[in-house]
Image (tube, rainbow, N blue to C red; front, side, top):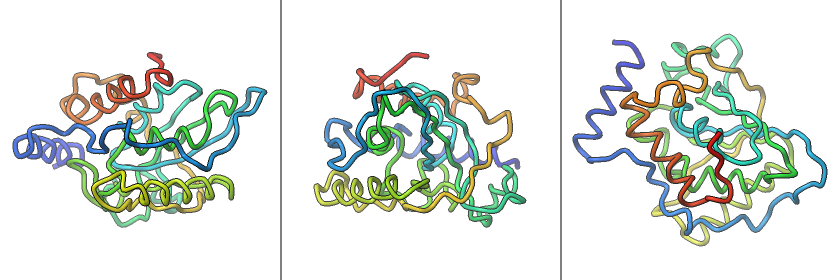
Length: 223
């Protein structure tokens, strides 16, 4: 059975047992803005964030609809270049996590605001090495920081959310240095947009985008 078939089979089982696979991250209104963040700059530019949390299809779909995001790319981070391919990563032994690289304009959206979206609608940060029907270290939740400022903001935000007991359990999202990001195969890019009727997308990822639109209307773009 192919990895995609295994993913689909797991999704069907979860639907039958739980009735829904919508994001379990909770009410975005309960997730406060980060107390520690970078300031918006006055001139347009480009900065990069890399995050992981379950299947990269859904994370990419969410950030494609955030104002200020220039582009988002599905890929792999945490392992070596020679193992950065879907079939190898799917074995769960490469150190890679299915990740998304987000290129954004810091004059329109801050790094902390992106993390608020991430924690609010993109994943359940209390799940260890899994999200929804997908299980394995390649589906772990990670913020891959590119510099010390990103590390400081991410660590402070996780501490803030844990202290406020925003989620039903402790956040298990890792904060790790970004060594490299390797774009995934072409057929994984924009998957939710290209395949909106795929059952996996309908049950797992479309609700995340809908939650973004409902909870953050000022940040949502229909592009």
